[in-house]
Image (cartoon, rainbow, N blue to C red; front, side, top):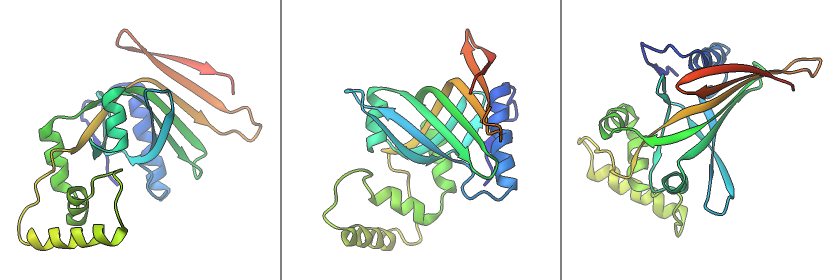
Length: 200
């Protein structure tokens, strides 16, 4: 999996995120770009799920989803989110806290065009997080849509697109055999990153 890294990536913690992901990729870690996304509902109840990092730049980390899904609705109400990467093969973890904003329609369109046809069909027929009567009906809907769009380009649904999480805090954690794990915290203050070390 190749990340779409910005050519002007200059911020130390974002460079480090990319380096750690690339390290996991080289070690053939499955879905090395998978990350847990946590959101919070109005009552304060947190909710987490796995999403895939698709791009990283000085502006932040980008993932794609259905805007009308549970996560999309929660981010509409409260754009604050948290990400977590963990790779048992490298014994490393990254925690990211920040604010999510939708990517431009152009960026969402461009990425949608790169997706496999199966993924495009799934995004078109599946109303993510909504209740369905049975799984077979969903499969049949996908087959019907596939037949109807055979030989045609599939247009990105308006309810589907990207989010950019602009980090405000990024923590890097490295496991140590002596249990004195290494923790390095970057905090964004006045558009500048400040680095501190944390006790495990």
